[in-house]
Image 1 (spheres, helix red, strand yellow):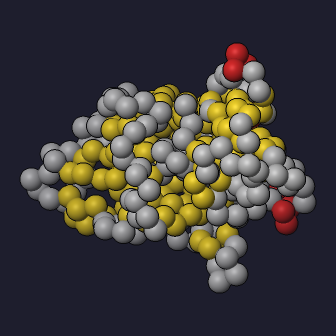
Image 2 (image 1 turned 90 degrees about the horizontal axis):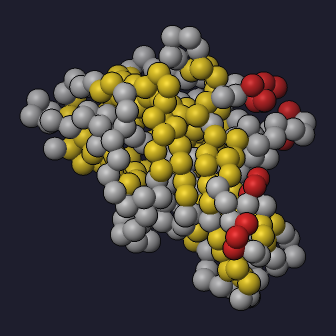
Length: 284
């Protein structure tokens, strides 16, 4: 997967670090692959490159241990979580009280608006991000010669003029913007491991923000109250900070993974949703 050649964003914020992506509708844990170009039909969920992908970042940092250790894929390939966030080993590298809005679909560097902090020298196997659980999206996809454009709420439309940005609120990793169904069916956490391109494991937990800047993970019963997403990325190679390190630049790609195409079960397309992005780290 050539995930660093287009539609990438370099965010350089002093000693800020931005990691993880959007884990919206995971389609019942089905692992989506890159969508084929103009297929005759669609049989499974897959990823495309969106035209717009915006997130609001409140905080980023580095950790010496996993703050979402209780969130993982179990032996039955199902996501499980204890709903806990443990930041005892973490240090913030960027903070913004109001959140810094960035568009990952651009090709140019963007500065984060907020306060940067330098972490202590050391080896950090995990990095975290705190973002609003709302993603601004826009995209299109062609099936059997017909181009479908996204519009409000991720619905599809064949008229290009109706292709507009829309906000997708994440309340349930299975149902997207709706915290519905029985509690047993609700998913408040997500996880995905990338084995190609930039490798590592991404995890996320729906949360609410506390007055002191900390986050509390929601439960299946309280997913409707979520206003934030707490994400963790564990790269295959840990991030190393030395006394000589002046900053950390993170390059994100949404190419072939930033938007999910959901099938309708009969060979056609049902709707658009968001997908993850992958980070690459470089110190300077």
